[in-house]
Length: 240
Image (cartoon, rainbow, N blue to C red; front, side, top):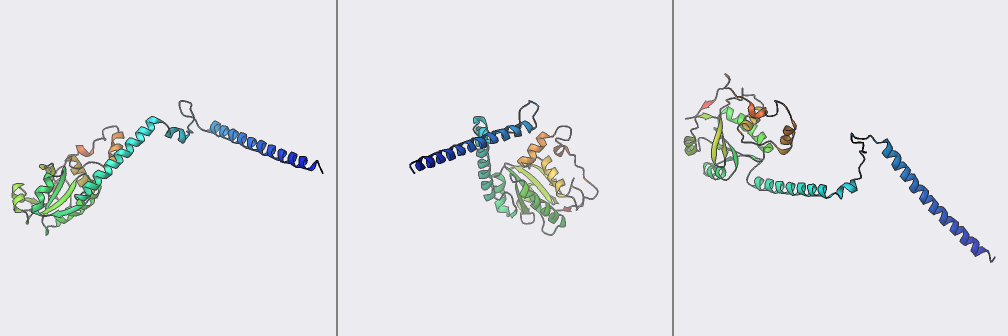
């Protein structure tokens, strides 16, 4: 009976030792498995393994600085986008003659469509501009009724509708008269996009701009090098 406590202690000690041994065996097995996985990983040209410990990368100061810079830039872009949205960017809206001067002079880039509500080609232009406005957020897209805006229609020498005028910081830099260079009435929206890109009044979204920067060869700047010619199908409406 006196030996029973010692027997129980011996059994407990033996169980603890087995647990320690088991844990060591498991750890050794994990190490062996990890080593085996690393050995089977394909290697890059420098001979190093592609498998990288992400927690170690996150501790890299240079990478952390890049990450913080990226976050700061995203926040700044979001703030700028919110401010632009409050001013009407991202939409295609009709404005009055009284609002025209303030918008044009206080916005970096504006595309203004002078239209007539009864002209079919003005309605076609509306459809394309409404689609483009959502994509090119840095440019403000507006439309002004030419019959209701006689002062600016005369000052800007608008005689044919539809008429798109590109403004940069209040200065009229170029225009698209009628469907000149766009084609027939069923021209795709991309043709008008290319025309506006050639006028340098819209900017490619960041992702597309980065993709273009990666392109090598003669096609890199193809959009801005397009040459437009008036076609026989252009039948625009005179407005005097």
